[in-house]
Each structure stands twice: as C-alpha cells, then as structure tokens.
Length: 257
Image 1 (cartoon, one colour):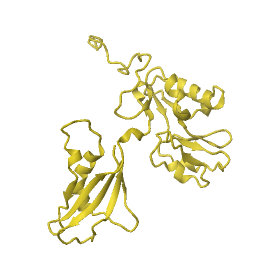
Image 2 (cartoon, one colour; image 1 turned 90 degrees about the horizontal axis):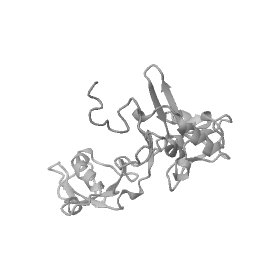
Image 3 (cartoon, helix red, strand yellow; image 1 turned 120 degrees about the horizontal axis):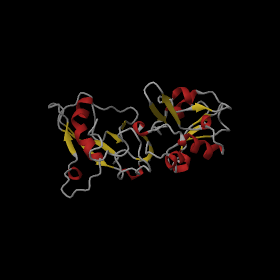
C-alpha cells in the first residue's frame, strides 16, 4: 500500500474554505495526516476518495490506469480547486505481519498457551500466557484472544510512564519493566481484552516472540496464523473433527447431513 500526498495544485475559482495553492495532506493507510493549522474540505474529500483508495494499492498490471491518473477537481463549480495525488512511499512490503485468528478452527487444545508461557517464562503455565483461549461450554466454542498489534496502540498511549513502545521491526508492543508502575492502565485501555496482568502486576502483552510467534508454531489446526490479511497462510497440520474448517470437506462427506 502506498503512502500518498494530496496537494492543491491550482485554484480556478473561489474556495470558501479557503485553501491556497500548495496546501496538502497525507494519507497513510486509513489515516489522514493533516498539518497543524490546515483544513480538509469534506466535499472535496468525498470526490477524491475513490481515486485515493485505488492510488494506494500496488497492482502489477500493464494496463493499470491508476499510476497515470493523479488529478481530480473539487465538485464545487464555484471553487474549481484542482488536487494532485502523489505517491510518496513504496508499496506495502513494510506492512507488519500480525496474529490472525480463525476462531472456528480452534479445538481448545490450549497448546498455544503452553508454548507462549514456556517461551517467555520457561514454565508451562497458561496463566502466564500472552495468548489465551476462552471456552464457552454452553455453545461448544473455543476462542483464542490475542493482541491485534494495533497500528495506533491504545495501550501504548495509555501508559503514563512510557513503559510500552512499538518494536521498530515487528511493530509488536514491548514492555520495559524498569519503567512500569503496574498501574494497569494499559489493560483497561485495550479494546479487545488482550492484556492481562501477571502475578507481579506487570502486563502480559504479546511481543510476537521477536518475530517468530511460538503459538503459531504450536497450533495444529491453523486457528492462529502469522501474516497479513489476504495473503496465503501456512496450512494446518491436522484437520479439525466435527467442524468445517480448516479443511474443506471431501466429496460426499456431508451428503447424509
């Protein structure tokens, strides 16, 4: 995915905002980055949005028109503001990989918890795992809960001591215990309930094991993967009896159902 800069290239009419030639904003993923003191017209943004989204993508097609199309005009006939969309960064080879969970494939074996706790604590202790499996016996469901490696991590923002930061390579959240006051604010800030506090009060947050998550290696059914959404994932080692995934049923398997 490309990073973009949207620049006011020419003004042929009168803009009520007003904008001036050279004004710009940037698009990074799903974020609009607006310089301090500047503004973005939502009418112009509505017209720009279809081109912005296609300019972000990296398409390996010889007849792709998006690299050669970079200008759009504001829909206000009185304004006639012409915007230019420039690609200012390379395609998304730098998009970090994340833990991808397919809850329907989970058997509740909890091997992920054991692998995680042993790697970090050198003991098989599920209560010390950074990933955990929640069981719903009434419905017969097992759901792994793992850190989403949020782009803008609320846990990092919530830490009053600056004890949490993002690893520059993996983009995983890492903890500096020497700065941690064990206040628990990061746990409260996580919208996914992926943070728990250890016996000493320090947060247990997934650090992706430095880039090789042990929970992914341990998962036999492909319920936990490490990659990017939309990419081909590593196939599971075993099928999951009684459920449709991770393997497609063979011909005739469901005929009697």
